[in-house]
Amino acid sequence: MSRRPDRAPDAPVVVLLEGRGRFLVGERFFERGGSRVTIGAGPREARAGMLAFVRPQGRGGRGKVLRVLGRPDVARDVLEALMLDRGLRRRFPARVEEEAAHAREQPFEAPARRDLRDLLTFTIDPVTAKDFDDAISAEALEGGRTRIWVHIADVSAYVRAGGAIDREAERRGTSVYVPGLVEPMLPHALSSDACSLVPGQDRLAVTVELEYDGVDVVSVAFHRSLIRSDVRLDYEQVDRIFAGEEGALEPWVGPLAAARAVSAQLEARRREGGRALAIESVEPEFAFNASGHITGVAAGEQTESHRLIEHLMIAANEQVAKLLSTRKIPALYRVHERPEPQAAERLLDQLESLDVATPPAPTRMSSSDAAEVVAEASVLVDAHVRRTGHGRRGLTTLVLRALRQARYDPRNLGHAGLGLEHYCHFTSPIRRYPDLVCHRALLSAIGAGEDAPQGGGLELEGAWASEREREAMVIERDADDVARCFVLEQRLFQGGWDEVFDGEVVGLVGAGAFIAFGEAGDGAGSFEGFLPVRVIPGDWWDLNEQGTVLHGRSTGGTLRLGDPVRVRVERVETARGRVDLLTA
Image 1 (cartoon, helix red, strand yellow):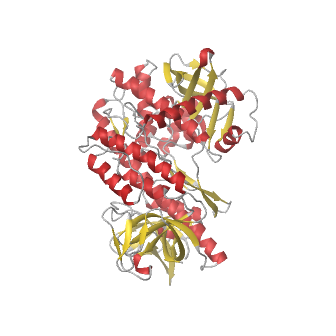
Image 2 (cartoon, helix red, strand yellow):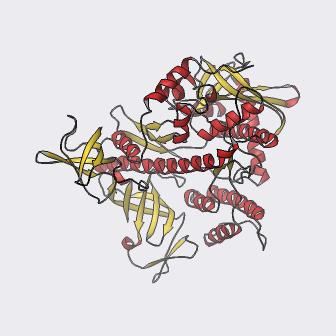
Image 3 (tube, rainbow, N blue to C red):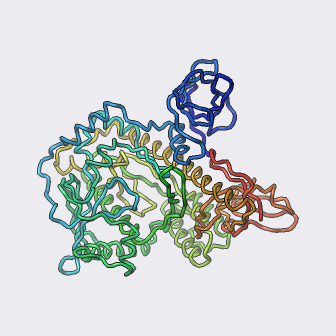
């Protein structure tokens, strides 16, 4: 687990309370070592065995309990504690809540808002979704053309630039999602109510209207709009409809078919073009009971319904970025620069060491060549995984490490991962601040009642938003690890610690192998752990130069990225999200 960065000496910490005579002593829960904190007096609910959020006071090792968080054996309590320990506020300042309540009742009255409530409109989201950024309308036109409307919540009508909500949203930068909990960027009065495109309610939106002839956009228009979502669909339901396992009720047959057709054409172009990466990521999905305990975990799937929404959102983002770039409106672009040639060459060496097919590469590689090589390699990796049935996690990680990190920048530098010259984030303003910046930029460009962002501060804004995004990703990853440990520990207590798991090597370092294991399959694994080389019997092990194979010095044995392995669990450190493994 990653440590919270740059913790100030007096920053609050999460501790596990223990009784010491008349006093309570708190030991840091998420970090090994460190000084203990003595609690003289605290809230009545502060008892030994409880988790507490404590502020150290002075140099005497004393501390004040700010909040009692619950029990260390309840997953939701521990995940709440983790969010606080990483510096998330978990509450909004009173001034922000007051402004949000007022804005909910009296949003900004924009000029010339287009009434689109007569359009058949639907949302497609996870079953557990609570806030809805986007909705879709679609219809087939004469001559084989299709019109798509991408409706995005008009957050800028409620969050005025420079106000208390805006400053707090900018500070947060993004919503943070951990299993069963969320740290929202906006107060619930907006994120889950006024801005959320819930069915049956009139909602303010910004609409991107696209007309397609095949995969070509032949016309595009942007509106501030008034919409009403007619139905909430979920991914699983739409996949059943697409598979013919469930019938779509009228009048949804036509709109779903039209949106599906455009999505399929966009996906085909993306694959055939060879410029976009062929990478599928899977996120774990956890189920909780009413008591806050996790009852199960599964690897999420990227199904056709997910890809439909993804393709349409990418299309809207691209068109907004094109307009902003053409008109030179200050904004934040989602930038993914081309990889360094050396990184592409290393990727080819790594894949060759694993006997994975690689694309041809020029002797002297430019950054443009490197982008094409990495994209083509990702396609070959995908084909290899589909053919062999293993290696997706590990090989995908190699491809991703060959890339530069995506970020926000006021310069339009293109998005190499998507193979696009123009790209921004526009479609999730409820949960990402750069999207709100792009909303204001777009609305200023079309004369819809907003001022353009001030260009002078956008470089710092982009750097801050990028940093907050990275911090959120670390918190989310660590929270997933903690949640997995809860499920694994419960399983082992019930079934015994001698259980043998099928797993797959998803990462290698000199000290050992990272293993995904459990039932999820396709290299995803329900659980993750570390297998040290010191517990692999019979040999001494060395990592090859490419970081893809451990070689046994005496036996000549190998442990390669993507290899299947059988393991047992030696130890689970739930608070730190760590699992130590043994060979089976």
